[in-house]
Length: 612
Image (cartoon, rainbow, N blue to C red):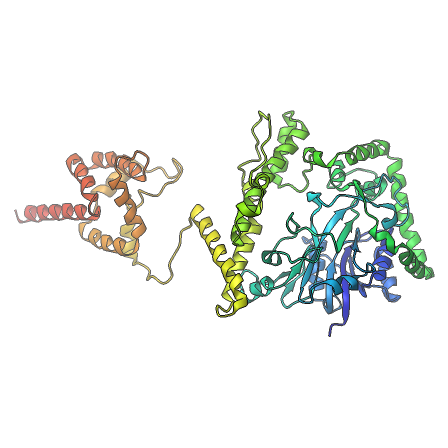
């Protein structure tokens, strides 16, 4: 039996102003084990957590981040090895600006688990973005009481998930969902993950493939009826501006600019479910703060943030910053595609954005171009994922989803389309799922009725992977075939043997005298041996000349490239009649035979000359 029942794992830095409420809230709704990793805190968050651990409320762990590593991944790696975290029936990884909102029963975590299918291994809980609710002051009171306006259910940009899950062997923790080690190498591990039952926020089963990869809800998988995760990413205007300060009044426009605020400051609907716990949360907060040491640490944290706000207010730019945020918050949902938010884009695209801005292209137009590119690729990926899962895309997707968005009336070419970054959108997810499904099937028992679904999906996954291989062919070495001798390899390296290999013009320019040398210095006897080897092993190479010769009239075949090199051969060894005769014979036989007979004639002539 596990040591703990419900565990929260979190990573924090400078969250002292709202830490007590966050701990009290989640203790109130039933989490018996709260584990927090901290790094580089300036406001005393780590000291507060150490005291809370002494009082029995949480467990605190240091996150000493090695040089070159990031805090969150490092903390997740440490937590995976930590029995205080992992020895639990259920685990939820979440941040300090997220509050779990259970909608069933009395709103406690055990009410949610009791309602779930007993066989379920995980539940994917979708975000709901909560906005500023028009609040300016950085510390107005309880987060859950003061910020009650949020995005509607169908706000797709806010459909990220966090996962509450049962631990399993070889687990690899992630920010949004757990994975499994060696899922791409070990069939048994891929199958273990595939066989898990995952539910959405309404208690309905997620697609089988989601347990393998994915961290966002989609229209078919979205569920808010039982549970959601309140994401207070911006809070008030001043609280948001504090994120843009890095130790002084200088504003560093990194991630937290007005575009980010426009995306997260959603206030379209009122959602009050979390406020049902206000009375119980306040009672627990009073218990925590009744400790004099904890009260002093809390006051120090509030003082730290209050000083930073004063620095903002006296910066001379404060009024403009607040004005910009208020304007950004007024952008309606249907106009968000016109907001230029670039921090999440590939570096290549960020540079293109700068180039377009320098050329005088309005931000709205650039944002629409990016949206158009992403939407078009998402449509392709969606269809490919459905195909990998054995589903008919035409049946599952409506007409709007099957066609990509096109910009109307735009006369400017979209520089983001057909780029390497655009080609990669969604591809890792698609490839990861198809590979893991195919691998999981290797561990399945064909005689087991429960494995039939997996095997069917694996067959579809194989088809998808095969179609991808056809689209981008790769050289394949068959290790079961014996390697050719060095003599054979050397003899095969001729101009004729490489005539069907295409490369960019002038990649390796060949001087005329080198070509002439090769043509003149043919060795007849070894050539015959090469023909046999090529016939036996290199059938693809042999088939190409056959086909090319048979379709000699077609102007764009690879034969034409070979033919263009033959005038060079004529110059070196001026026998035009022989060169012309070779082509008709190759239509019925291989090119090697006429060359061999020609070589024999040359050999006989040499012998005669010697006798004389």
